Image (cartoon, rainbow, N blue to C red; front, side, top):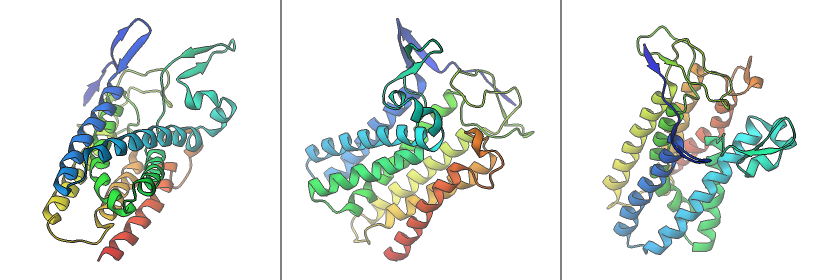
Length: 274
């Protein structure tokens, strides 16, 4: 058994705090930028196009992930407190507000936000939509690795109790976690997902550069990404604890239900590419 008692906060300067999750989220964008820079240089595309693409990705990810969490998992609360969807604040019992930072981002919401942002980008830049998705999916898979490690540092989104020797006992329980951390050894599903996403990134990266000198049907890499990543997400969800109270008793939880359309879309793209 592993006892996990990591402080989510790296350091604090007055009222300003820096969390591991924030650092890893930032690292995902930095790593993704340099990988895309390598791809753009190989294909002779100006760097200024990549800079604009990075802004679209950042806004699409943040807005989509935030709205996804609010509307998929806690719609009742956030629809009654709409300011908290977009501002890093929370209402106190006395009716005042306090700064708490953003707590709650949903990966499926991020996926929808990215798809919408990149579609807008493709229209403005006059680039084929699938061309962009094939390349950006490589770095999105790597970003998933960083974000799940961030979840591990926050002691959140872990699995059900287990007797396996690698089970994690999550000690620290920040006040925003639902449900609270318990003292039972649990599946470290953050690590399971992180390793799966890292392997998917390596597979997509190898596929792109292996085939970069040969023509392949648009949508092939994006289809590989959708099927592999969301299938892994679907399977790992079976051993996760519920992320919201309404999921208890459901045959498939919200994460699994949201994964199915992405998997089906990926299968269609793979069939089309073959």
